Length: 135
Ligand SMILES: [Zn+2]
Image 1 (cartoon, rainbow, N blue to C red):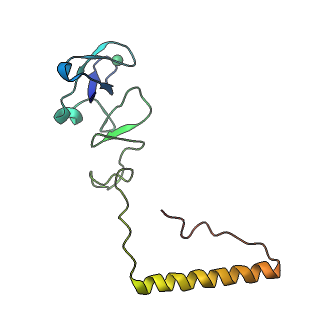
Image 2 (image 1 turned 90 degrees about the vertical axis):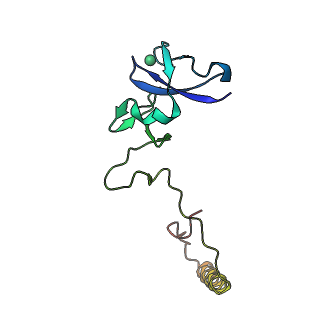
Image 3 (image 1 turned 135 degrees about the horizontal axis):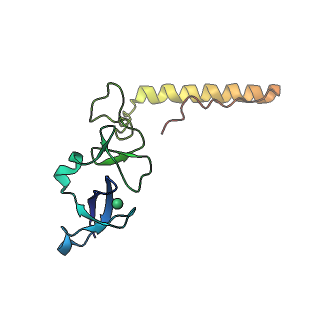
């Protein structure tokens, strides 16, 4: 069943509910006050209730709607509307060239050698969590 968006006037909030295709325009009970709430046509989603410029999602989880996606924080500052940090995926990793792979391998080998040296000398190993943890 498709997921539709509804607007409860009483709670002044937007919620999602499963709908039946044959009754796509039928109201759905609000999860908060159980009153019948009208379905929002997808195109007019953003025209409804706003909290700090964002439609409020109910049940209210303290979240916001950004371009029809649920986000934890509204955009602040000088972000562009299509660049919400919670929605914008980090750029896909560039494929490394053969030379870069070789360099990485050398680095790893050097690091491993370094670590072995430390082990041999009985020094505690400090794990660096700041580098290379991405992905
Ligand atoms: Zn309600």
